[in-house]
Length: 171
Length: 159
Image 1: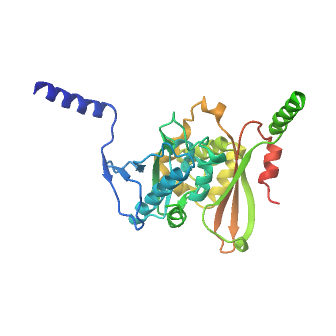
Image 2: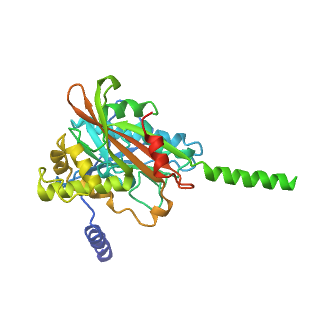
Image 3: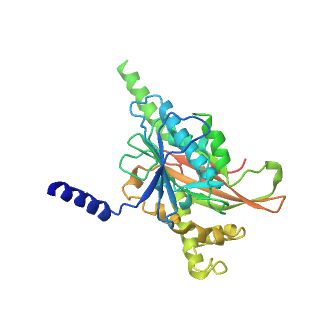
């Protein structure tokens, strides 16, 4: 009993000390049925502006790139649908090498797909094992985004309606 | 036989080093038709990292001096970019961005050795309805071999 209490207290302390942000986890209903399990992570702290959209599947063993394409499409589709459901018109990716708010220009799904799949293999900046902040880590897709209601001059952002139309062609 | 194989191999290696492998991406800040364009001007040309740095400098300057004095102390390149954006009220946008804008600034040094060459050209476009919109051309090139700036300008230029 004593040991159990110690383990629980230790886990709580680790969670607090590691800077773990309390968050709400959602799965959302999308008009088009998806194969992937996708989780939306929204921090409880109202000042935090980002949202994570995590695809819980992975495409290990995907030799043709088809699986990666579908999982990217489903993750972008969910991102756009979640934004639309909350009254937004645009979103920006804020992951390290593809951060729209830091000047990364690609702002439509089809071009992003081409960028992630340059030369037919994953040598681009979308895919980096050593960076947790890349869009693809360990063969799984995870987006970190910020939503907007208006466009911002100088920042290229994804149009939510356009992203829905483009990504659903690959689902 | 052996000699001709070696010659072919050497030629292959030599020619592949002459032709850089690159792709160009294009996009708009919002949809518009070519027939709506009144004027078009390049407000930035350079490496993606320089563009990111300029955006950060503009935001810092706005926070420090306010929108009217935002150009104070900026490099020529950032000042041109700021003028292009301030026309459309970058002020409001920059304050709205908050912490998000600074997310990508810690690009690990080691990655720069492996990173592709990434160049960006930004256009400010005035439309018939008096709205200003933006367009980009983005070149990603394998660094083996790298392209020089003149060649990149040729590739990204309007023909």
